Image 1 (spheres, one colour):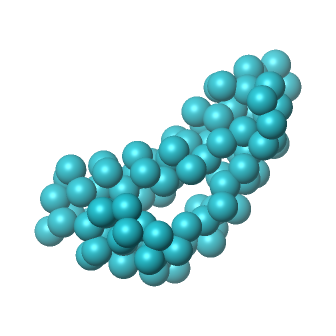
Image 2: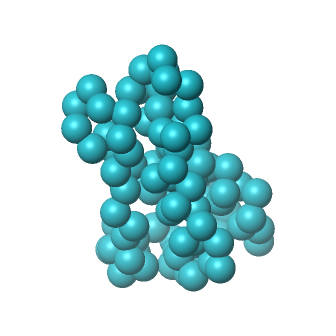
Length: 98
């Protein structure tokens, strides 16, 4: 797995983080299964490392808790960006490249 493979996994997961409703600051994220990720053409070893990681559930919880950590005046788009950043932070800090 190379850096591009890892960036692809991050970007793919980030696109699955959405706002529950337009204009809302509630974040929605349905964790995909490994089969869904592989079917999307993501690197199988990278999928196994990320999806099978012991911190996966913690990351999902942190994504969903992001709005509670934001300032009350933050725009929905900013809250969404913060929630998506959670994915990048977790993966970049915890997944080693070959």
